[in-house]
Image (cartoon, rainbow, N blue to C red; front, side):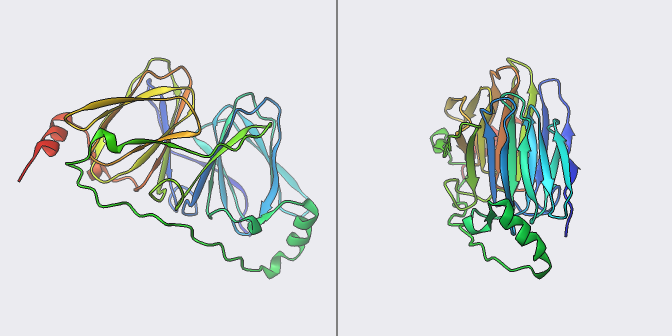
Amino acid sequence: MKQPKIIQLPKITDPRGNLSFLEGNKHIPFEIKRAYWIYDVPGGETRGGHAFREQQEFIVAMSGSFDVVIDTGKGRKKKFQLNRSYFGLYVPPGCWRQMTNFSTNSIALVLASTHYHENDYIRSFEDFRTFAAKSKKKQSLTIPNNNQYSNPAIDDSKTSVHDCKIIELDKNHRDKGNITVVENGGIVPFDINRVYYLYDVPGGEERGGHAHKELYQLIIAAGGSFDVVLDDGKEKRTVHLNRPYQGLKVVPGIWRELINFSSGSCLLVMASHRYDEKDYIRKYEEFEIIKNYTV
């Protein structure tokens, strides 16, 4: 059985706010099928108390701090404290885990290897002990692939700021902290191949200033607020983000800038492609040429 372990993520330091990122099967040992984040957590709360038969998880404290207590069913527990945005905890299947000691208004990001399937959950500790005792004879659980979407063919020279839309995400209200979930094949029309986030952002800062040729993005204000300035070469539009349960879908071929950050904001981005420098358009003059080019 794989063991729980802390994994250090890349950290790009910047006085305007630091950035960390990860890709499935590169920085973490699985492809990302589902992501969710827990927010509005009262201080000192405990969340979780379940195990998975097949699902692997990667847990990050995007803001604040909390502990993750792991029980592998062998009579020993281990506690991991998460309080740095560039470290995360890998949790293999077959581990009972609880998230405890939340600092007030922490933000926990959880990336999962499978789509949601209730039968994969073990919600009773007695059932978990039985499962752990039989773990040498692992029973395979088929978790369906819910992927219904693929990126539509888009001519990035013809996209406009009106193709970028606010998507209302599910908000699962809980007294111990709210949860919002994004799943491949769900409401977001692309598979999540890369996740990155900005943190430690001073108030009033500006970030961004680039476009993509093929990349789709879902931009979320997981904490705090900021504005996204969208530019298609002919028209500009500013979108204000300040709700963890709303995401801005940005299509390829849009120049975007991030401005007016509130102090300590957390910006979370789900991306459709792995990192590829050739997909970036980093000079506005080059962007204008691409958008205005006609055969």
